[in-house]
Length: 363
Ligand code: NAP
Image (cartoon, rainbow, N blue to C red; front, side, top):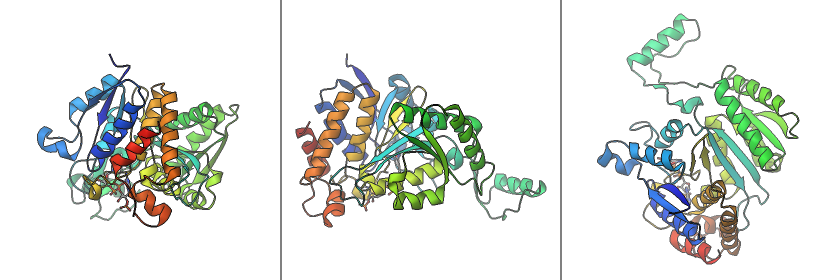
């Protein structure tokens, strides 16, 4: 029997290509993993009538650990995000997104070392929405007017932004525990509490309460407004250490952080709950590159490094990270996005699988 069984969700768009590259790299480390392939996404809609079939969730529940490629979410219409559904279904309340510089990416900065801890289950991503023109939207608009709470134009669509004490406590605790376990120095809670008093204001208040419980941990704590955070991340990326944010800001700020380290092809992530963990890159399914063997698999390979660490296979994770660093520093066998950022041209780029081969050769 294999040492680990891991659910592998290849996903949509570039997902299957980068998943195969990642799997080849992980297998080449010699770590004994049985991959249980579970298809989810736009492409399984026709067969199962849903983009997230029950057996995919069952597989993750059984194996406890999964790694997934990106899944397409139609904009505005169609099914709700599978990614959001998965996080809610398994209560994967933390989205951990480390952003660190690797030499050779051509990124504007070479000293980035930031960890984004994004709340994954609440906020505007709670999926509580009322369609413009629906009876429910009209009822809610009337109710708000009756309570004297404000005027909402009758032709509005509405999305709710719930933020709870429970949800905030556990994500801020996660940020502190992560900081302690990983030798970090500071946690910053990021919000827009000056405007959103009852949602972000609560997030800020609870964050301070949790920080008080950790006051002897040696971890510094501060809070910051999200717009100012974005500017200071660009001006002074060295100021930041562990950032903890509500869902929407966490999503946006992690793309900003990806930009600081050379782009979305470089940014790994993990969705972590009390019992399960699903590893996935920050980026989406980049449909225009699907099937072209062009996409950069680094973000998914680095997500696999996080997964190997989680599985207790730290030595293998370190080897993969060192191999990726070697290939990027060398710069000869890298994908189009890295060539473009580093040399200003995509000429000389290699494909997804050739890049994986280069990583495997260095393991
Ligand atoms: P995206 O798929 O992340 O792609 C945006 C751009 O980022 C690409 O055009 C490409 O830029 C660059 N990029 C992304 N991944 C890359 C990679 N592996 N290698 C090199 N470059 C990469 O964002 P999107 O086009 O907005 O979203 C597409 C779909 O993915 C949507 O349906 C969205 O909902 C979904 N999505 C899913 C997840 C998830 O599954 N967790 C996350 C985010 C988005 P250039 O064209 O400039 O090279």
